[in-house]
Image (cartoon, rainbow, N blue to C red; front, side, top):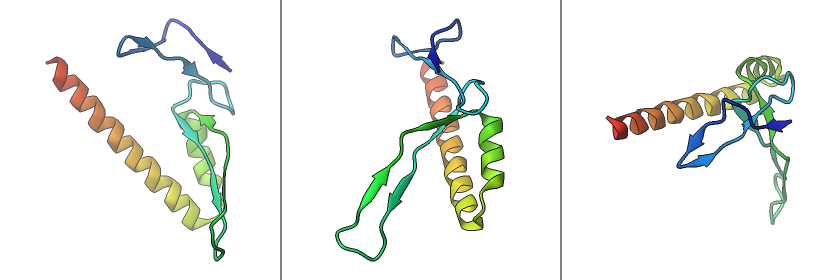
Length: 98
């Protein structure tokens, strides 16, 4: 469920909508879009899911329940990189206003 509320953030003068976790309705911090590709056939066939939104807690629970160690490592690596980029962006934005 998407909604506007008092916590709506402005970015570049535009309003952004807070979005809810697909599991618990808390504010979502992450979305997952799944890409599934064929292997060993040419041309490759790919299909994509729609985005599924998660809060920090539910994303962490999801990651812990992944049945494949390789998939868990890939998801955790992607999350670590996303958090790093987010921190870097925040640092750059703060320095622009100082």
